[in-house]
Image (cartoon, rainbow, N blue to C red; front, side, top):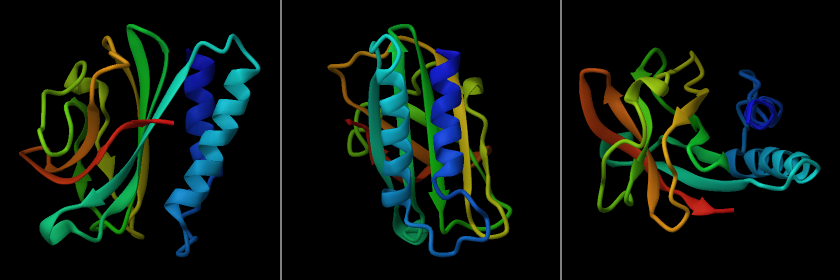
Length: 164
């Protein structure tokens, strides 16, 4: 699990997380990073599942975009990751994997403390990952969302997780 988590985080780091890249194409660069992780995982025991979500901002936060991912290779633990762009520099944004869809909402999956908040850089980006100890039902719907701040849990961006 630790090797796959490292690979997922490393693939994202290599897939366009350069702070000087103003032309970052989240979908293309992250898809390439996910493909690298899947290829590497296939070289192992093959017992893994990857979910991905396209994150879009809502209302006054509509400019926010990004990708969320979940890598599951053990039923009781998963690696989650988020990479966002076009956010307010200096903002601290809690994020989580939740049960349900963006439309339905739902409780946080696992301990909220497992998810380190996003801290938005001067160019409006950040990417973080989390190791979450919690069951992940492959048949259930899940989504990734981003909140205003640690004291205001209003959802400002969201994406439904889909099997890759």
